[in-house]
Image (cartoon, rainbow over all chains, first blue to last red):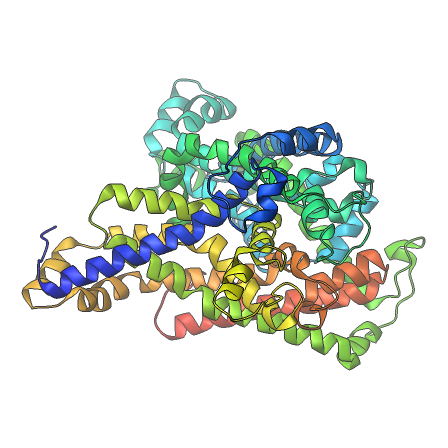
Length: 290
Length: 317
Protein backbone atom coordinates (compact mmCIF):
# COMPACT_ATOMS: atom_id res chain seq x y z
CA UNK A 1 0.00 0.00 0.00
CA UNK A 2 1.25 3.45 -0.86
CA UNK A 3 1.53 5.54 2.29
CA UNK A 4 0.41 9.12 2.18
CA UNK A 5 2.59 11.31 4.31
CA UNK A 6 0.43 14.35 4.94
CA UNK A 7 0.41 15.93 8.38
CA UNK A 8 -3.18 14.90 8.97
CA UNK A 9 -2.37 11.34 8.13
CA UNK A 10 0.57 11.31 10.50
CA UNK A 11 -1.54 12.79 13.28
CA UNK A 12 -4.11 10.07 12.63
CA UNK A 13 -1.41 7.43 13.00
CA UNK A 14 -0.15 8.86 16.28
CA UNK A 15 -3.64 8.91 17.80
CA UNK A 16 -4.41 5.48 16.44
CA UNK A 17 -1.28 3.92 17.93
CA UNK A 18 -1.76 5.63 21.28
CA UNK A 19 -5.40 4.57 21.51
CA UNK A 20 -4.60 0.96 20.62
CA UNK A 21 -1.81 0.97 23.17
CA UNK A 22 -4.30 2.20 25.75
CA UNK A 23 -6.78 -0.54 24.78
CA UNK A 24 -4.07 -3.18 25.08
CA UNK A 25 -3.07 -1.88 28.51
CA UNK A 26 -6.67 -1.80 29.76
CA UNK A 27 -6.99 -5.46 28.78
CA UNK A 28 -3.55 -6.55 29.89
CA UNK A 29 -2.87 -4.78 33.19
CA UNK A 30 -5.74 -6.27 35.22
CA UNK A 31 -4.73 -9.78 34.13
CA UNK A 32 -1.10 -9.02 34.90
CA UNK A 33 -2.06 -7.67 38.32
CA UNK A 34 -3.98 -10.82 39.23
CA UNK A 35 -1.24 -13.15 38.03
CA UNK A 36 1.54 -11.23 39.74
CA UNK A 37 -0.20 -10.69 43.06
CA UNK A 38 -0.80 -14.43 43.32
CA UNK A 39 2.98 -14.67 43.75
CA UNK A 40 3.18 -11.82 46.25
CA UNK A 41 3.16 -11.99 50.02
CA UNK A 42 -0.02 -11.26 51.95
CA UNK A 43 1.59 -8.15 53.51
CA UNK A 44 2.59 -6.66 50.19
CA UNK A 45 -0.89 -7.35 48.81
CA UNK A 46 -2.44 -5.49 51.75
CA UNK A 47 -0.03 -2.61 51.44
CA UNK A 48 -0.22 -1.99 47.68
CA UNK A 49 -3.41 -1.63 45.64
CA UNK A 50 -1.69 -2.68 42.43
CA UNK A 51 1.14 -5.13 41.87
CA UNK A 52 2.95 -5.52 38.57
CA UNK A 53 6.16 -7.12 39.86
CA UNK A 54 6.02 -8.45 43.43
CA UNK A 55 8.93 -7.48 45.70
CA UNK A 56 9.33 -11.04 46.91
CA UNK A 57 8.18 -13.99 44.86
CA UNK A 58 6.47 -16.65 46.93
CA UNK A 59 4.47 -19.77 46.18
CA UNK A 60 2.73 -19.78 49.56
CA UNK A 61 -0.71 -19.09 48.09
CA UNK A 62 -0.41 -21.92 45.57
CA UNK A 63 0.90 -24.32 48.17
CA UNK A 64 -2.05 -23.48 50.40
CA UNK A 65 -4.63 -23.72 47.62
CA UNK A 66 -3.42 -27.03 46.27
CA UNK A 67 -3.09 -28.52 49.74
CA UNK A 68 -6.76 -27.86 50.55
CA UNK A 69 -7.86 -30.78 48.42
CA UNK A 70 -11.07 -29.05 47.32
CA UNK A 71 -9.32 -27.02 44.62
CA UNK A 72 -7.21 -29.99 43.58
CA UNK A 73 -10.30 -32.15 43.22
CA UNK A 74 -12.16 -29.44 41.29
CA UNK A 75 -9.17 -29.03 39.00
CA UNK A 76 -9.39 -32.73 38.23
CA UNK A 77 -13.13 -32.54 37.58
CA UNK A 78 -12.68 -29.59 35.20
CA UNK A 79 -9.82 -31.27 33.37
CA UNK A 80 -11.80 -34.49 33.10
CA UNK A 81 -14.99 -32.96 31.72
CA UNK A 82 -12.96 -30.79 29.35
CA UNK A 83 -11.07 -33.74 27.87
CA UNK A 84 -13.97 -36.19 27.75
CA UNK A 85 -16.47 -33.48 26.75
CA UNK A 86 -14.32 -32.21 23.90
CA UNK A 87 -13.76 -35.76 22.65
CA UNK A 88 -17.48 -36.63 22.78
CA UNK A 89 -18.45 -33.33 21.16
CA UNK A 90 -15.91 -33.55 18.37
CA UNK A 91 -16.85 -37.15 17.64
CA UNK A 92 -20.57 -36.41 17.45
CA UNK A 93 -20.23 -33.08 15.70
CA UNK A 94 -17.77 -34.11 12.99
CA UNK A 95 -19.67 -37.31 12.18
CA UNK A 96 -22.94 -35.44 11.89
CA UNK A 97 -21.39 -32.56 9.92
CA UNK A 98 -19.87 -34.98 7.41
CA UNK A 99 -23.01 -37.09 7.24
CA UNK A 100 -24.94 -34.05 6.15
CA UNK A 101 -22.65 -33.20 3.25
CA UNK A 102 -24.03 -35.84 0.88
CA UNK A 103 -26.39 -34.04 -1.46
CA UNK A 104 -28.54 -37.02 -2.38
CA UNK A 105 -29.26 -37.83 1.27
CA UNK A 106 -33.01 -37.99 1.81
CA UNK A 107 -34.17 -35.91 4.75
CA UNK A 108 -31.03 -33.78 4.70
CA UNK A 109 -32.95 -30.53 4.36
CA UNK A 110 -35.29 -31.42 7.20
CA UNK A 111 -32.40 -32.26 9.51
CA UNK A 112 -30.55 -29.06 8.59
CA UNK A 113 -33.67 -27.09 9.39
CA UNK A 114 -34.10 -28.90 12.72
CA UNK A 115 -30.55 -27.93 13.65
CA UNK A 116 -30.82 -24.26 12.67
CA UNK A 117 -34.19 -23.93 14.35
CA UNK A 118 -32.64 -24.79 17.73
CA UNK A 119 -30.52 -21.64 17.36
CA UNK A 120 -33.69 -19.56 17.13
CA UNK A 121 -36.00 -21.21 19.60
CA UNK A 122 -35.56 -23.38 22.68
CA UNK A 123 -37.70 -25.10 25.24
CA UNK A 124 -35.95 -23.13 27.93
CA UNK A 125 -34.22 -23.84 31.18
CA UNK A 126 -36.90 -25.73 33.13
CA UNK A 127 -37.99 -28.23 30.45
CA UNK A 128 -34.33 -28.98 29.70
CA UNK A 129 -33.66 -29.37 33.41
CA UNK A 130 -36.58 -31.80 33.69
CA UNK A 131 -35.28 -33.87 30.76
CA UNK A 132 -31.84 -34.13 32.37
CA UNK A 133 -33.49 -35.01 35.66
CA UNK A 134 -35.70 -37.70 34.08
CA UNK A 135 -32.62 -39.22 32.46
CA UNK A 136 -31.12 -39.59 35.95
CA UNK A 137 -28.15 -37.37 35.16
CA UNK A 138 -28.50 -35.11 38.20
CA UNK A 139 -25.29 -35.12 40.24
CA UNK A 140 -23.49 -37.06 37.54
CA UNK A 141 -20.45 -35.71 35.68
CA UNK A 142 -22.21 -36.67 32.45
CA UNK A 143 -24.72 -33.89 33.17
CA UNK A 144 -21.86 -31.47 32.55
CA UNK A 145 -21.10 -33.04 29.18
CA UNK A 146 -24.05 -34.64 27.42
CA UNK A 147 -26.71 -31.87 27.62
CA UNK A 148 -24.26 -29.55 25.81
CA UNK A 149 -22.49 -32.11 23.66
CA UNK A 150 -23.30 -30.58 20.27
CA UNK A 151 -23.32 -26.88 19.48
CA UNK A 152 -25.51 -26.13 16.47
CA UNK A 153 -23.24 -23.22 15.61
CA UNK A 154 -20.06 -25.35 15.58
CA UNK A 155 -21.88 -28.01 13.59
CA UNK A 156 -22.85 -25.49 10.90
CA UNK A 157 -19.25 -24.23 10.73
CA UNK A 158 -17.88 -27.74 10.25
CA UNK A 159 -20.49 -28.70 7.71
CA UNK A 160 -19.76 -25.68 5.54
CA UNK A 161 -16.03 -26.38 5.82
CA UNK A 162 -16.53 -29.99 4.64
CA UNK A 163 -18.83 -28.84 1.84
CA UNK A 164 -16.09 -26.53 0.56
CA UNK A 165 -13.54 -29.31 0.15
CA UNK A 166 -13.02 -30.13 -3.53
CA UNK A 167 -15.43 -32.81 -4.81
CA UNK A 168 -12.79 -34.76 -6.69
CA UNK A 169 -11.00 -35.89 -3.54
CA UNK A 170 -13.96 -37.74 -2.14
CA UNK A 171 -14.93 -39.15 -5.48
CA UNK A 172 -11.51 -40.59 -6.17
CA UNK A 173 -11.42 -42.06 -2.67
CA UNK A 174 -14.71 -43.80 -3.37
CA UNK A 175 -13.50 -45.06 -6.74
CA UNK A 176 -10.46 -46.48 -4.98
CA UNK A 177 -12.85 -48.48 -2.84
CA UNK A 178 -12.87 -46.34 0.28
CA UNK A 179 -15.97 -46.69 2.49
CA UNK A 180 -17.84 -43.65 3.81
CA UNK A 181 -16.16 -43.96 7.19
CA UNK A 182 -12.78 -44.47 5.54
CA UNK A 183 -13.24 -41.37 3.42
CA UNK A 184 -14.07 -39.33 6.51
CA UNK A 185 -11.26 -40.53 8.72
CA UNK A 186 -8.50 -40.99 6.14
CA UNK A 187 -9.23 -38.21 3.66
CA UNK A 188 -11.63 -35.55 4.92
CA UNK A 189 -10.50 -35.11 8.54
CA UNK A 190 -6.76 -34.88 7.78
CA UNK A 191 -7.58 -32.17 5.25
CA UNK A 192 -9.66 -30.28 7.79
CA UNK A 193 -7.13 -29.74 10.55
CA UNK A 194 -7.80 -25.99 10.64
CA UNK A 195 -11.47 -26.39 11.42
CA UNK A 196 -10.90 -29.41 13.69
CA UNK A 197 -8.41 -27.43 15.78
CA UNK A 198 -10.66 -24.39 15.93
CA UNK A 199 -13.80 -26.22 16.92
CA UNK A 200 -11.91 -28.37 19.44
CA UNK A 201 -10.63 -25.20 21.04
CA UNK A 202 -14.15 -23.73 21.12
CA UNK A 203 -15.51 -26.87 22.78
CA UNK A 204 -12.59 -27.13 25.22
CA UNK A 205 -12.99 -23.49 26.26
CA UNK A 206 -16.71 -24.01 26.64
CA UNK A 207 -16.34 -27.07 28.89
CA UNK A 208 -13.51 -25.58 30.91
CA UNK A 209 -15.34 -22.30 31.51
CA UNK A 210 -18.92 -23.44 31.97
CA UNK A 211 -20.55 -23.39 35.34
CA UNK A 212 -24.21 -23.03 34.39
CA UNK A 213 -24.57 -26.81 33.95
CA UNK A 214 -22.85 -27.39 37.26
CA UNK A 215 -25.06 -25.08 39.30
CA UNK A 216 -28.11 -26.56 37.58
CA UNK A 217 -27.29 -30.25 37.73
CA UNK A 218 -24.67 -30.79 40.43
CA UNK A 219 -25.94 -30.50 43.99
CA UNK A 220 -23.01 -32.21 45.60
CA UNK A 221 -20.24 -29.69 46.42
CA UNK A 222 -17.71 -32.54 46.26
CA UNK A 223 -18.32 -32.80 42.53
CA UNK A 224 -18.06 -29.12 41.63
CA UNK A 225 -15.85 -28.13 38.73
CA UNK A 226 -13.29 -25.40 39.22
CA UNK A 227 -15.39 -22.48 37.97
CA UNK A 228 -18.10 -23.07 40.57
CA UNK A 229 -15.55 -23.42 43.33
CA UNK A 230 -13.86 -20.25 42.10
CA UNK A 231 -17.16 -18.42 42.36
CA UNK A 232 -17.56 -19.66 45.93
CA UNK A 233 -14.07 -18.65 46.93
CA UNK A 234 -13.80 -15.27 45.23
CA UNK A 235 -17.33 -13.90 44.98
CA UNK A 236 -19.46 -15.65 47.58
CA UNK A 237 -16.80 -15.63 50.29
CA UNK A 238 -16.44 -11.88 49.77
CA UNK A 239 -20.12 -11.52 50.62
CA UNK A 240 -20.83 -10.00 47.23
CA UNK A 241 -22.77 -12.76 45.53
CA UNK A 242 -26.25 -13.96 46.45
CA UNK A 243 -25.55 -17.26 48.23
CA UNK A 244 -24.28 -17.22 51.76
CA UNK A 245 -23.46 -20.90 52.02
CA UNK A 246 -19.75 -21.49 51.65
CA UNK A 247 -17.09 -23.90 52.73
CA UNK A 248 -14.50 -21.30 53.59
CA UNK A 249 -15.56 -20.01 56.99
CA UNK A 250 -12.77 -17.46 57.08
CA UNK A 251 -12.70 -15.20 54.01
CA UNK A 252 -9.59 -16.35 52.19
CA UNK A 253 -6.56 -14.10 51.87
CA UNK A 254 -6.39 -11.97 48.73
CA UNK A 255 -3.35 -13.85 47.44
CA UNK A 256 -5.22 -17.15 47.76
CA UNK A 257 -8.09 -15.78 45.67
CA UNK A 258 -5.61 -14.64 43.05
CA UNK A 259 -3.96 -18.05 42.98
CA UNK A 260 -7.31 -19.77 42.40
CA UNK A 261 -8.13 -17.35 39.58
CA UNK A 262 -4.79 -18.13 37.95
CA UNK A 263 -5.25 -21.89 38.35
CA UNK A 264 -8.67 -21.61 36.69
CA UNK A 265 -7.24 -19.58 33.81
CA UNK A 266 -3.84 -20.93 32.89
CA UNK A 267 -4.69 -24.42 31.57
CA UNK A 268 -6.97 -23.11 28.84
CA UNK A 269 -4.59 -20.30 27.92
CA UNK A 270 -1.82 -22.86 27.49
CA UNK A 271 -3.76 -24.51 24.69
CA UNK A 272 -4.33 -21.25 22.87
CA UNK A 273 -0.87 -20.56 21.36
CA UNK A 274 -0.69 -24.09 19.93
CA UNK A 275 -3.96 -23.67 18.16
CA UNK A 276 -3.61 -20.00 17.29
CA UNK A 277 -2.17 -20.62 13.84
CA UNK A 278 -5.27 -22.63 12.99
CA UNK A 279 -8.08 -20.70 14.54
CA UNK A 280 -7.68 -17.39 12.76
CA UNK A 281 -8.22 -19.32 9.52
CA UNK A 282 -10.79 -21.73 10.94
CA UNK A 283 -12.92 -19.13 12.69
CA UNK A 284 -13.03 -17.08 9.54
CA UNK A 285 -14.21 -19.91 7.35
CA UNK A 286 -17.03 -20.46 9.79
CA UNK A 287 -18.10 -16.97 10.57
CA UNK A 288 -18.01 -15.57 7.08
CA UNK A 289 -19.66 -18.52 5.37
CA UNK A 290 -21.70 -19.78 8.32
CA UNK B 1 -21.78 -24.24 -4.47
CA UNK B 2 -20.59 -27.72 -5.42
CA UNK B 3 -21.25 -28.74 -8.96
CA UNK B 4 -23.60 -31.67 -9.31
CA UNK B 5 -21.48 -34.77 -9.74
CA UNK B 6 -22.32 -37.59 -12.09
CA UNK B 7 -23.30 -39.89 -9.25
CA UNK B 8 -25.65 -37.31 -7.82
CA UNK B 9 -27.31 -36.66 -11.15
CA UNK B 10 -28.16 -40.33 -11.51
CA UNK B 11 -29.40 -40.44 -7.95
CA UNK B 12 -31.65 -37.46 -8.47
CA UNK B 13 -33.25 -38.78 -11.64
CA UNK B 14 -36.32 -40.95 -11.00
CA UNK B 15 -38.16 -40.18 -7.78
CA UNK B 16 -39.78 -43.60 -7.65
CA UNK B 17 -40.12 -45.74 -4.55
CA UNK B 18 -37.38 -48.16 -5.47
CA UNK B 19 -34.96 -45.34 -6.32
CA UNK B 20 -35.66 -43.81 -2.91
CA UNK B 21 -34.94 -47.11 -1.22
CA UNK B 22 -31.76 -47.55 -3.20
CA UNK B 23 -30.54 -44.10 -2.18
CA UNK B 24 -31.24 -44.78 1.48
CA UNK B 25 -29.44 -48.13 1.34
CA UNK B 26 -26.47 -46.61 -0.44
CA UNK B 27 -26.27 -43.82 2.14
CA UNK B 28 -26.79 -46.10 5.14
CA UNK B 29 -23.40 -45.25 6.62
CA UNK B 30 -24.04 -41.55 6.26
CA UNK B 31 -27.29 -41.99 8.22
CA UNK B 32 -25.36 -43.93 10.82
CA UNK B 33 -22.96 -40.98 11.17
CA UNK B 34 -25.81 -38.52 11.60
CA UNK B 35 -27.58 -40.68 14.18
CA UNK B 36 -25.75 -39.77 17.43
CA UNK B 37 -26.05 -36.03 16.73
CA UNK B 38 -29.66 -36.40 15.67
CA UNK B 39 -30.49 -38.23 18.90
CA UNK B 40 -28.79 -35.42 20.81
CA UNK B 41 -30.92 -32.76 19.13
CA UNK B 42 -34.13 -34.73 19.58
CA UNK B 43 -33.52 -35.47 23.26
CA UNK B 44 -31.94 -32.24 24.50
CA UNK B 45 -33.49 -29.68 22.16
CA UNK B 46 -36.81 -31.03 20.90
CA UNK B 47 -37.94 -33.01 23.95
CA UNK B 48 -37.70 -29.78 26.02
CA UNK B 49 -39.80 -28.00 23.39
CA UNK B 50 -42.43 -30.67 23.89
CA UNK B 51 -41.94 -30.07 27.62
CA UNK B 52 -43.23 -26.54 27.13
CA UNK B 53 -46.71 -27.99 27.51
CA UNK B 54 -46.23 -28.06 31.28
CA UNK B 55 -46.72 -24.29 31.15
CA UNK B 56 -50.39 -25.16 30.51
CA UNK B 57 -50.46 -27.46 33.54
CA UNK B 58 -49.98 -27.45 37.26
CA UNK B 59 -47.03 -29.75 36.89
CA UNK B 60 -46.46 -32.13 39.76
CA UNK B 61 -43.14 -33.99 39.49
CA UNK B 62 -44.56 -37.24 40.96
CA UNK B 63 -47.38 -37.33 38.44
CA UNK B 64 -45.25 -36.41 35.44
CA UNK B 65 -46.29 -34.56 32.32
CA UNK B 66 -48.86 -37.15 31.31
CA UNK B 67 -50.88 -37.07 34.52
CA UNK B 68 -50.51 -33.51 35.78
CA UNK B 69 -53.74 -31.46 35.76
CA UNK B 70 -54.37 -29.11 32.83
CA UNK B 71 -55.00 -25.50 33.78
CA UNK B 72 -55.19 -23.71 30.44
CA UNK B 73 -53.68 -20.25 30.44
CA UNK B 74 -53.53 -19.89 34.22
CA UNK B 75 -49.73 -19.60 34.32
CA UNK B 76 -49.75 -16.99 31.56
CA UNK B 77 -52.49 -15.01 33.30
CA UNK B 78 -50.40 -15.00 36.44
CA UNK B 79 -47.38 -13.90 34.44
CA UNK B 80 -49.10 -10.93 32.82
CA UNK B 81 -50.62 -9.73 36.09
CA UNK B 82 -47.51 -10.27 38.22
CA UNK B 83 -45.71 -6.95 38.94
CA UNK B 84 -42.48 -8.89 39.58
CA UNK B 85 -42.71 -10.29 36.08
CA UNK B 86 -42.90 -6.84 34.52
CA UNK B 87 -39.88 -5.71 36.54
CA UNK B 88 -37.94 -8.68 35.18
CA UNK B 89 -39.23 -8.02 31.70
CA UNK B 90 -37.99 -4.42 31.95
CA UNK B 91 -34.58 -5.54 33.26
CA UNK B 92 -34.15 -8.13 30.51
CA UNK B 93 -35.02 -5.61 27.82
CA UNK B 94 -32.79 -2.91 29.36
CA UNK B 95 -29.73 -5.15 29.57
CA UNK B 96 -30.43 -6.41 26.06
CA UNK B 97 -30.69 -2.90 24.58
CA UNK B 98 -27.66 -1.59 26.49
CA UNK B 99 -25.72 -4.59 25.23
CA UNK B 100 -26.72 -4.07 21.59
CA UNK B 101 -26.27 -0.28 21.61
CA UNK B 102 -23.00 -0.01 23.53
CA UNK B 103 -21.24 -3.23 22.57
CA UNK B 104 -21.91 -3.34 18.82
CA UNK B 105 -19.78 -0.37 17.68
CA UNK B 106 -16.71 -1.28 19.76
CA UNK B 107 -15.34 -4.25 17.79
CA UNK B 108 -16.07 -2.44 14.52
CA UNK B 109 -14.11 0.64 15.56
CA UNK B 110 -11.35 -1.54 17.03
CA UNK B 111 -11.08 -3.55 13.81
CA UNK B 112 -10.86 -0.40 11.71
CA UNK B 113 -8.18 0.99 14.03
CA UNK B 114 -6.18 -2.24 13.87
CA UNK B 115 -6.49 -2.26 10.11
CA UNK B 116 -4.89 1.19 9.91
CA UNK B 117 -1.78 -0.05 11.72
CA UNK B 118 1.17 -0.38 9.34
CA UNK B 119 3.56 -2.23 11.67
CA UNK B 120 2.75 -5.96 11.59
CA UNK B 121 4.54 -6.56 14.90
CA UNK B 122 2.60 -3.92 16.84
CA UNK B 123 -0.61 -5.16 15.26
CA UNK B 124 0.03 -8.77 16.22
CA UNK B 125 0.91 -7.89 19.82
CA UNK B 126 -2.25 -5.82 20.29
CA UNK B 127 -4.38 -8.52 18.66
CA UNK B 128 -2.96 -11.29 20.82
CA UNK B 129 -3.63 -9.27 23.96
CA UNK B 130 -7.18 -8.23 23.11
CA UNK B 131 -8.15 -11.80 22.14
CA UNK B 132 -7.17 -13.23 25.55
CA UNK B 133 -10.22 -12.20 27.62
CA UNK B 134 -12.53 -14.15 25.32
CA UNK B 135 -10.95 -17.31 26.73
CA UNK B 136 -11.53 -16.33 30.34
CA UNK B 137 -14.76 -17.54 31.93
CA UNK B 138 -17.33 -15.07 33.24
CA UNK B 139 -16.38 -16.11 36.77
CA UNK B 140 -12.83 -15.00 36.09
CA UNK B 141 -13.82 -11.76 34.34
CA UNK B 142 -16.18 -10.83 37.17
CA UNK B 143 -13.59 -11.86 39.77
CA UNK B 144 -10.90 -9.71 38.18
CA UNK B 145 -13.16 -6.67 38.04
CA UNK B 146 -14.18 -7.21 41.67
CA UNK B 147 -10.54 -7.29 42.64
CA UNK B 148 -10.01 -3.97 40.86
CA UNK B 149 -13.17 -2.30 42.18
CA UNK B 150 -13.35 -3.43 45.80
CA UNK B 151 -13.38 -0.81 48.53
CA UNK B 152 -10.56 -2.36 50.52
CA UNK B 153 -7.51 -1.81 48.40
CA UNK B 154 -8.92 -1.96 44.87
CA UNK B 155 -6.88 0.16 42.49
CA UNK B 156 -9.89 2.09 41.17
CA UNK B 157 -11.04 3.30 44.58
CA UNK B 158 -7.47 4.02 45.63
CA UNK B 159 -7.20 6.31 42.61
CA UNK B 160 -10.56 7.96 43.26
CA UNK B 161 -9.47 8.62 46.84
CA UNK B 162 -6.08 9.92 45.70
CA UNK B 163 -7.68 12.43 43.34
CA UNK B 164 -10.14 13.47 46.04
CA UNK B 165 -13.35 12.01 44.58
CA UNK B 166 -14.07 9.84 47.59
CA UNK B 167 -14.80 6.16 47.23
CA UNK B 168 -17.56 4.50 45.25
CA UNK B 169 -18.99 1.12 46.17
CA UNK B 170 -19.32 -0.13 42.57
CA UNK B 171 -20.15 -3.67 43.62
CA UNK B 172 -23.05 -3.01 45.97
CA UNK B 173 -24.51 0.19 44.54
CA UNK B 174 -27.22 -0.81 42.06
CA UNK B 175 -26.64 2.33 39.98
CA UNK B 176 -23.34 0.82 38.78
CA UNK B 177 -24.54 -2.73 38.10
CA UNK B 178 -25.65 -2.21 34.52
CA UNK B 179 -22.67 -0.08 33.41
CA UNK B 180 -20.43 -2.70 35.01
CA UNK B 181 -22.22 -5.45 33.09
CA UNK B 182 -21.71 -3.65 29.77
CA UNK B 183 -18.07 -2.79 30.46
CA UNK B 184 -17.31 -6.39 31.35
CA UNK B 185 -19.01 -7.55 28.16
CA UNK B 186 -16.95 -5.13 26.08
CA UNK B 187 -13.72 -6.03 27.90
CA UNK B 188 -14.23 -9.74 27.32
CA UNK B 189 -15.68 -9.86 23.82
CA UNK B 190 -14.70 -6.77 21.81
CA UNK B 191 -11.20 -7.96 20.88
CA UNK B 192 -12.40 -11.35 19.70
CA UNK B 193 -15.25 -9.65 17.85
CA UNK B 194 -12.75 -7.85 15.60
CA UNK B 195 -11.70 -11.07 13.82
CA UNK B 196 -14.63 -11.20 11.44
CA UNK B 197 -14.51 -7.49 10.65
CA UNK B 198 -10.77 -7.66 9.99
CA UNK B 199 -11.41 -10.49 7.54
CA UNK B 200 -14.10 -8.48 5.79
CA UNK B 201 -11.79 -5.45 5.61
CA UNK B 202 -8.94 -7.59 4.27
CA UNK B 203 -11.04 -8.56 1.27
CA UNK B 204 -11.50 -4.95 0.16
CA UNK B 205 -9.75 -4.12 -3.10
CA UNK B 206 -6.73 -1.89 -2.22
CA UNK B 207 -7.25 -0.08 -5.52
CA UNK B 208 -10.30 1.58 -4.02
CA UNK B 209 -8.17 3.25 -1.35
CA UNK B 210 -5.63 4.34 -3.91
CA UNK B 211 -8.31 5.88 -6.07
CA UNK B 212 -9.78 7.67 -3.05
CA UNK B 213 -6.35 9.03 -2.17
CA UNK B 214 -5.94 10.30 -5.72
CA UNK B 215 -9.21 12.12 -5.26
CA UNK B 216 -7.75 13.71 -2.13
CA UNK B 217 -9.57 11.70 0.51
CA UNK B 218 -7.95 11.77 3.97
CA UNK B 219 -7.80 8.78 6.27
CA UNK B 220 -11.19 9.46 7.84
CA UNK B 221 -12.88 9.90 4.48
CA UNK B 222 -11.32 6.66 3.23
CA UNK B 223 -12.69 4.84 6.27
CA UNK B 224 -16.10 6.44 5.93
CA UNK B 225 -16.53 5.94 2.19
CA UNK B 226 -14.71 2.66 1.57
CA UNK B 227 -14.10 0.57 4.70
CA UNK B 228 -17.47 1.25 6.23
CA UNK B 229 -19.73 0.46 3.27
CA UNK B 230 -17.64 -2.64 2.54
CA UNK B 231 -18.27 -4.22 5.92
CA UNK B 232 -21.86 -3.09 6.30
CA UNK B 233 -23.41 -6.43 5.37
CA UNK B 234 -21.13 -8.28 7.83
CA UNK B 235 -22.12 -5.81 10.53
CA UNK B 236 -25.79 -6.49 9.90
CA UNK B 237 -25.46 -10.28 9.85
CA UNK B 238 -23.50 -10.25 13.10
CA UNK B 239 -25.95 -7.87 14.69
CA UNK B 240 -28.84 -10.21 13.94
CA UNK B 241 -26.89 -13.20 15.29
CA UNK B 242 -26.01 -11.24 18.41
CA UNK B 243 -29.63 -10.31 19.06
CA UNK B 244 -30.41 -14.00 19.43
CA UNK B 245 -27.35 -14.83 21.50
CA UNK B 246 -27.66 -11.95 23.98
CA UNK B 247 -31.10 -13.21 24.96
CA UNK B 248 -29.77 -16.73 25.44
CA UNK B 249 -26.31 -16.37 26.89
CA UNK B 250 -26.51 -13.70 29.58
CA UNK B 251 -27.41 -16.11 32.40
CA UNK B 252 -23.88 -16.95 33.52
CA UNK B 253 -22.76 -13.33 33.48
CA UNK B 254 -25.80 -11.80 35.18
CA UNK B 255 -26.05 -14.58 37.74
CA UNK B 256 -22.56 -13.67 38.96
CA UNK B 257 -23.37 -10.00 39.31
CA UNK B 258 -26.67 -10.37 41.14
CA UNK B 259 -26.80 -9.68 44.85
CA UNK B 260 -29.47 -8.53 47.25
CA UNK B 261 -28.59 -4.88 46.61
CA UNK B 262 -29.03 -4.89 42.84
CA UNK B 263 -31.59 -7.66 42.27
CA UNK B 264 -34.13 -4.92 41.56
CA UNK B 265 -32.32 -3.83 38.37
CA UNK B 266 -30.40 -6.99 37.41
CA UNK B 267 -32.85 -9.90 37.75
CA UNK B 268 -33.59 -11.11 34.20
CA UNK B 269 -35.78 -13.91 32.81
CA UNK B 270 -33.06 -16.54 33.04
CA UNK B 271 -31.93 -15.76 36.58
CA UNK B 272 -35.54 -15.51 37.73
CA UNK B 273 -36.37 -18.85 36.14
CA UNK B 274 -33.38 -20.38 37.91
CA UNK B 275 -34.32 -19.13 41.39
CA UNK B 276 -38.11 -19.53 41.15
CA UNK B 277 -37.99 -22.70 39.07
CA UNK B 278 -34.99 -24.84 39.88
CA UNK B 279 -34.50 -23.65 43.45
CA UNK B 280 -38.13 -23.17 44.53
CA UNK B 281 -39.74 -25.78 42.31
CA UNK B 282 -42.36 -23.60 40.58
CA UNK B 283 -41.87 -25.58 37.39
CA UNK B 284 -45.02 -24.72 35.46
CA UNK B 285 -44.93 -21.00 36.12
CA UNK B 286 -41.24 -20.59 35.28
CA UNK B 287 -41.67 -22.72 32.16
CA UNK B 288 -44.29 -20.18 31.08
CA UNK B 289 -41.78 -17.39 31.81
CA UNK B 290 -39.14 -19.25 29.76
CA UNK B 291 -41.64 -19.81 26.95
CA UNK B 292 -42.33 -16.09 26.86
CA UNK B 293 -38.58 -15.38 26.76
CA UNK B 294 -37.92 -17.81 23.91
CA UNK B 295 -40.82 -16.29 22.02
CA UNK B 296 -39.48 -12.74 22.49
CA UNK B 297 -36.02 -13.92 21.36
CA UNK B 298 -37.43 -15.53 18.22
CA UNK B 299 -39.54 -12.44 17.48
CA UNK B 300 -36.54 -10.12 17.87
CA UNK B 301 -34.38 -12.16 15.49
CA UNK B 302 -37.14 -12.45 12.90
CA UNK B 303 -37.98 -8.76 13.15
CA UNK B 304 -34.37 -7.68 12.71
CA UNK B 305 -33.91 -10.09 9.84
CA UNK B 306 -37.04 -8.72 8.19
CA UNK B 307 -35.82 -5.16 8.70
CA UNK B 308 -32.42 -6.04 7.22
CA UNK B 309 -34.08 -7.45 4.11
CA UNK B 310 -36.40 -4.48 3.92
CA UNK B 311 -33.36 -2.22 3.68
CA UNK B 312 -31.88 -4.30 0.90
CA UNK B 313 -29.40 -6.34 2.93
CA UNK B 314 -29.09 -10.09 2.86
CA UNK B 315 -30.08 -11.07 6.39
CA UNK B 316 -29.24 -14.39 7.99
CA UNK B 317 -31.85 -16.55 6.30
